[in-house]
Length: 158
Image (cartoon, rainbow, N blue to C red; front, side, top):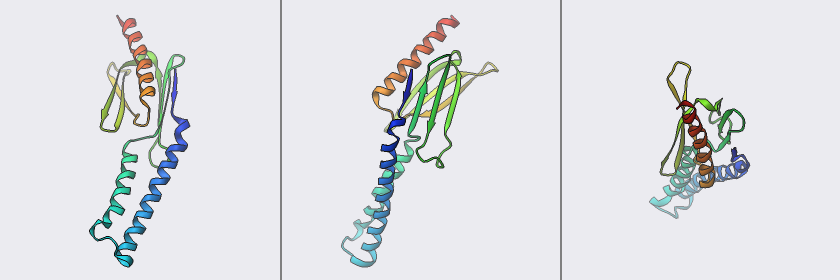
């Protein structure tokens, strides 16, 4: 099964550009109000605070583009940001039989996928992916696919 939200990259770019423009216009409005017009008193800080909080929230949600491929004998996970220099993209590929478990953690508006795979020395490794920008349907499809792999691995080991 393949899952990707790469086609939404243009929407995320638009939102990011819009938020940056809001920050720039907020700074301009604040400065104009403080030094020229004096139209708003103490509330002029809202021109700065609201756009900055929105931009920080957008970036705290994590990497926007998530790709998953379970076709064949390997699992492929890719997670990257729409702005290449902000974060290093993640790319992991490993055989299906190494998948032990997975967990999806939701905290407010942030969603993370934790994958536990077996390592060579008999231990396990946890891989983390940011899936905040996936829709509910995409998350359910991801859960369904990962459940199939985990169940198949448990049956092989028993």
